[in-house]
Image (tube, rainbow, N blue to C red; front, side):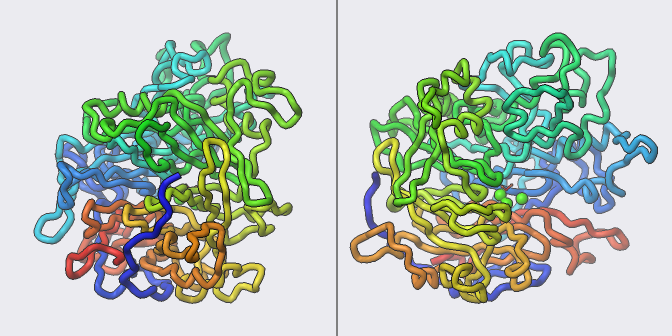
Length: 617
Ligand code: FEO
Ligand code: CA
Ligand code: CA
Ligand code: CA
């Protein structure tokens, strides 16, 4: 599949040293500036960001959200100086969001402020923000008609097998065709037809069900039984209303049916969600055919005229799986620029086959379909366990268990090499692994690794491990890729190929042996140039790994995640999530009112070359 060959590019920067400073560090000849930090107004409804935490829930609904993550740049008319940045806002720091943290009743220990909870709901989700390069500086275009927020309360369509399913019926949507909000939007994707994909990761923690007998999917996916992440269920809302405002987060059945309680609310979460950033009135659509799990990111395989459209996504939790979706519809290049983008999304993402990966010890792999006639490890079929395809989707990992998928070390982002179609997957870490398996060979995997494969037809693949994270001074079993001070890293997470064939690796590291040496970072490598003369993809050569170069180091306490670029590669956008103090701690007088406590603010960083040239080469 795809053509063998290698990128014609060469990395044009030297690896930078690790850094432990409260600033972004980039190579000589580059500069980095902050753009669109949390709280930046998108329109006149929002008041300017207040460093004392007193912005309202309404302000937050009309401003950039918190904890930036996956991101994509959508050019306006192909421009590299004017476009839409679409940014995921994964979760919140409630202590920074409010003046003195969340208000809690000291006796009942319950949340007391509906306004605070609404602000938290509105700080989650996705933002679409128009940005332009003006006089050499990227700026947010306030009040642009395309600026938009999607929050944990925004109405979204359900598409695919679960649309109108009984398990999607709620008081809010008796027909089961819409749900409210998107949550824990971590990694992302961009479709070949010009839309954005946002992936719902740790959504189970926002809901609970304390009943002693619960649906299998809730146990398998880890819905809590005794509380929710931020306590949003503490305030139910107006009891005279049929649909109380916050009661939906407690899914414990209390009535006779889904129309009398909130039992099905969590069933609207766990999906890849499609957004058309160019259409400010189009609703977001949850594409249920792609599976339901803790989704991290989604990437597409090579497009071939007349063949199905293939995409990949992983379930980020310990011992979870890697999935692939193959469309029923066959790709036609006319769909690269369609009149109706979401109709094209429906064409390629609402009907098809969902597969889960089984990695074999001999370097081969099998894609196991998750359909009613799929054979389970005990010789039955999924049809003996599930009544419908919708039931399989609802409990995707439960179906994957039954067919014998391979448990991985926390699958995070997936990226596909545009030069040859090789698929790369970050496996960030798994400190609870006691039994190694072939694609996850290190027990108590503290530093993570990157696995890759080539497709071999529709249901087979050939895999190897591309690189192991490690401290430079790790022993031979730990530092299996021969990393040095110039490129030691741990916990690979964000992973993005740009179309030149450069792979960008971002880290979210909690392993002391590496965090003592450097903050989280972004490294670059051109994998298609690392093969031997026979283009043998199955060569793992630790000497190759010297070609992995550190490009970017983030400020203290942060994670580096999310990358977007302009079509001409002269601007890169990189997200800084959960910084400790940054970005305004070193120059507070310049940016914040005097005498006001500085709040850490997740933000996008704009990276450019001083000479305006393309980045990385
Ligand atoms: Fe939100 Fe798996 O990182
Ligand atoms: Ca991540
Ligand atoms: Ca992570
Ligand atoms: Ca994160």
